[in-house]
Image 1 (cartoon, helix red, strand yellow):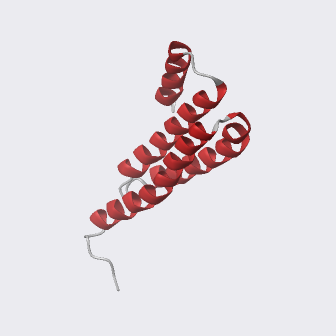
Image 2: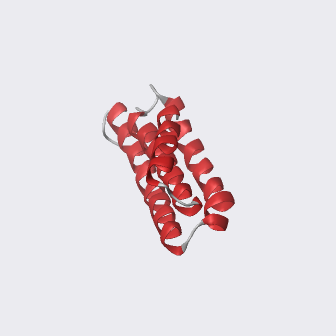
Length: 109
């Protein structure tokens, strides 16, 4: 979380981004945190990272509604919603794949 905040603090002023583009960068940082937590969560051994994945996705959804929609342009909204949608597809698959590896690899049918 601190690394993503630092990234936004450095990229924003350096690139002279407007409010919509900066909001899209913040969304990308939240999505990256969610995917990192999903990738590092190994089933039962790191269950708190799996929870943090869904907390980060919820925070990204709330941020999109509160900040991106009012401040964004069509291009930045397309980017932010595309990243968020991709994270909604990929994160549960990462969590499930990691949980399957930790549990022996075979799911009961």
